[in-house]
Image 1 (cartoon, rainbow, N blue to C red):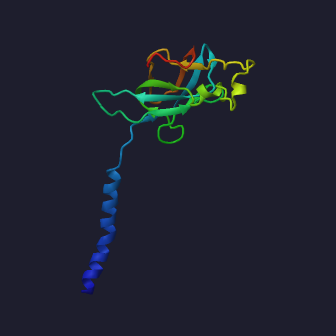
Image 2 (tube, helix red, strand yellow; image 1 turned 45 degrees about the vertical axis):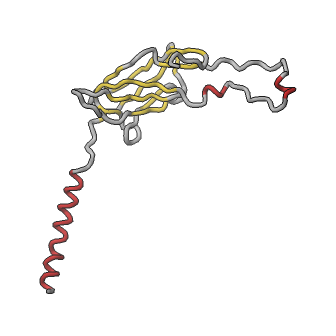
Image 3 (cartoon, rainbow, N blue to C red; image 1 turned 90 degrees about the vertical axis):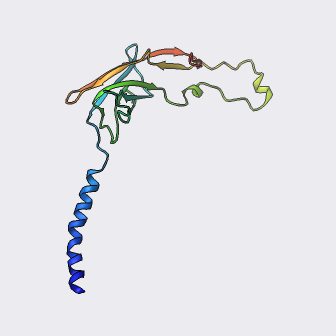
Length: 167
């Protein structure tokens, strides 16, 4: 009986290696990435807030081209895309660009509600200035290329007010 136990113990390490190799081979394979960065401007002036998202466009009838890459716009208007790890870039291929303004911008210029009726009726109160909104002027498609400097300038348009035509 002790010979059987010794024999089984000697088989454990090779079996463990086979199982580990099998499991490593079954993991999610990641598509090739390339670093991608750029600037967001409106009439040549850098935006200082918001985010840019590159959404992969399916090729060859691929229904799931992969996860989008996103980058936050910094104070100088620049962004660097992140897909899985910080600033690792975007999937190589064509992407639809999405621009998003930071949440809360619409509330920044709104005045708080008055707590008593005397303050509500005060004529010296000025209305809030209209909030500046930015948007992409239309659909924007870009291509991230392997082995190249993928630097993009994203031009947005300005509009005033909170109303949208999508309602």
